[in-house]
Amino acid sequence: MGRLRIVFLGSGPVAAKSLELLAKNFEIETVITKPKPAHHRGEFPVIETASQLGIKTKFVTSKTELDNIIVTAGFSSQLGVIIDFGIIVSQQVIDSFPLGIVNSHFSLLPEWRGADPITFSILSGQPKTGVSLMLIDKGMDTGKLITYRSINIMPSETTPSLTSRLISLSGQLLQEYLPRYERGEITPKSQPHPDRATYSRKITKDDGILDFTKSAEQLEREIRAYIEWPKSRTELFGKEVIITQAHSIPIDGKVGKVEIVKEAGTIIIYCSSGYICVEKLKPAGKKEITSDEFIRGYCKS
Image (cartoon, rainbow, N blue to C red):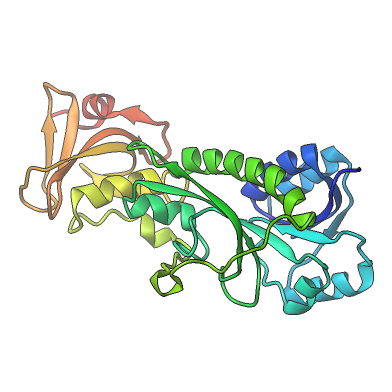
């Protein structure tokens, strides 16, 4: 019996890495993705990956274009797989695949439905997250579950490190469960406790502005969650900086007060509850340095 044939829909970096894993275990009939924007510099991950793997690619920028491709393409695949796509999929497209379209969603549904479940799992301080394989329907991440699996979130976890672990887990689940679903061995089940669903949203650039009226614990999570984008920004001693690593201490002081602890080579900033101890940061236009290096270079008295 040959490998299961699928159509893959995905656009972002997570989609590109997922496509690499899928191609090892499945026959990818076609990749459907967004085209590379005219202003974009450098590689566009899914396009590059599909090209390297020799997989036919079709481009769409809207729900309507996707509908048109599905109508005209005449795919033979019984199943679609969608990861990190960014375009609304109509019921017409879903129905065009006899077995539907499986979404590998990076949370334990119905927890963190929506655009950015990985970031919000770190921001919330929850101890675990995971991957849910779900049949998409007309709702936002409301479809029936094929399976799910959880992993622990490490205390020092950043969005990139957690994303990498979830991509690997997703690849394992797709490899194990898609063939079983295709053979009719699994009956998808409704998500448990839909009344307890939580929702993530798209992160904006303004989310990266550090607000010291929040707790130190929350800001420490933001620094880990936003390390790639939008980055955690503030001003220290007249210099714009991005804080890239910090930890929180439950000792209170005046909100927003900044202190240099020279003997420890560190900078502390008091928040509404506790303070953050800055370990590493990037002055505007410079490379990442330690707090001790920043003190010696920018805080000379």
